[in-house]
Length: 240
Image (tube, rainbow, N blue to C red; front, top):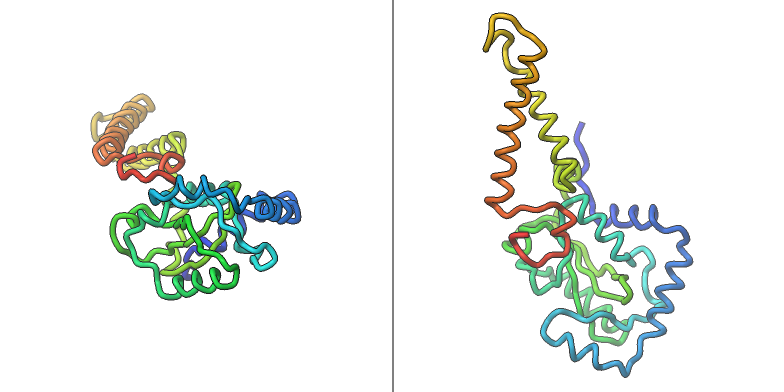
């Protein structure tokens, strides 16, 4: 039996559906955002010339596809679950495929605007070197909403969410270390350290194994500058 790979776009859609109490309310909010954008508010545009990206894009509401509108909360939850980052496209080290460029041109022509403030969801390593893991390109709508423009590359490993579960928080990581320590302790042959086995001996060995494994985990975390998913999902720094 083969496991299917994880499609992040589908997971985002599921997260939005799970968190949205009323779909119409979302559409009304997005519509009010687009309607309320002041075309004369050039002050915001002037503050983003440094390359940090625009805060909004004046999309034509009726031309947007509802399934491609995502709130920052949904994006954050997915990034934390799968240990991904959501950063400005200027930090992305891979290449935007021609299909993505074509979709940007098509959107600009359809909505009669010049898109700005692109964001990308991708694994951390894709912001340092090229790879083929499932990046997603977004453009901001405003007020925490983003419009999905294009997805390319391969889907994520089907077990990535499971593999990244220990890195969500300290509790998850501690549970994993405790479980591994127990497994290693059970693998120790009976009578290895004494002629008669006892519960006291078992717990002493378990505590010893826990200290050893925890020390390795702590050393690895500090040495490589690793951090938990909630701290890195939107960080532009490598060692966080």
